[in-house]
Image 1 (cartoon, rainbow, N blue to C red):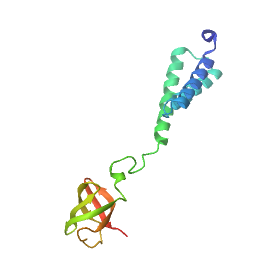
Image 2: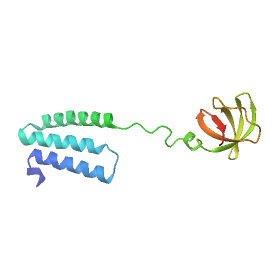
Image 3: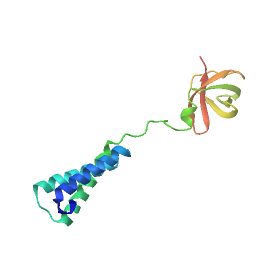
Image 4: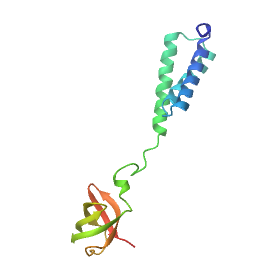
Length: 144
């Protein structure tokens, strides 16, 4: 039955199948290929084009659709799903500080630490809050 269908119908069905795949296995990739197949099917509704040219037109539509998809893609949120993101806002205890550099205990580990700007040097045992992470150094300030 499909073998006797017009090429435009086959491309339209292929586009719908790719969009269906995107709905069942989301990843925002098949959607763009499905939209390219739908566009190709619409072009074939208007003009009768040989198969080789159909594939070429589809390749152009797919490249355009994928470029649009990449352009619309949002960058990942800063700090999302990183080890450092889980440290910011946590409470630490000052161990020792020499100037602005020192060591703190966070959980069951000791960390290198640096004080945030404009913060007085804390006494050992003081409660600190992690403001940021710079490599393996915690940026801290007094709690409260």
